[in-house]
Amino acid sequence: MTADEFRAAMDDDKSFQARRRVLVIVSLLLLAFVTSGAQIKEANTFIFKIEFTNYDGLKYLLVFSVLACTVRYYSYSERYHNKLFRFWSSKLLHDYNIYHLDHQTGEPSGLLGRKINIYGDRYDVQNPVYRKAGFFRRSVGLKTINLDGHEAGIVLEEHWDLNEYKGGWRRQDLRKLLLAEARYRFQAWFKYRETLDLSSPYLLALSSLVAFGYSYIKPLLIA
Image 1 (cartoon, rainbow, N blue to C red):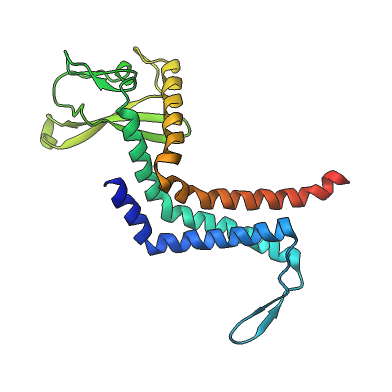
Image 2: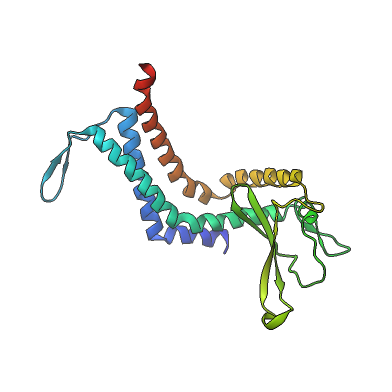
């Protein structure tokens, strides 16, 4: 999938856009109530008119709504986060200092070459895959053809755990890789507008919750 196709898929996904819009609205409402002291006096419906008297209770309701909408939004946006991760991680793996093929041996070299030790020509060394498996847990994979048993000929993906330090791979190497990853993550904020499109609802939700938390503890701090 190209970047243009990715943008079109996001823009055309009505379910995703609906959850994004709801999260932005409830976050803005909570932020407005907390920071400006705005109050809802009443709400008109098609059947009757509702008047609000317990403003503090309404704030707690909005906090719960922000949390619920954030979880709901994440479930719809996760696949786009994964696709965006593949975009910039592909750039990372095309960095000559991180991964390249030795012209003489045809084997992986660069920083990841210290971890990947392969023999034979059954690995697809041209298309490595970078994966995250948790907080600071990373692995790199190469597609390979199984040559043994009844599953011979099936294409598999073999992974190397980058949090496992042995051979030529050291803890310092993982730190260098994570620093390079952070650089490409940062660049993604400017190269792919989808990064901001996906992350801005989270940032807005977090801002509203932080503002609410501060307004809750501020009287305690003054006292």
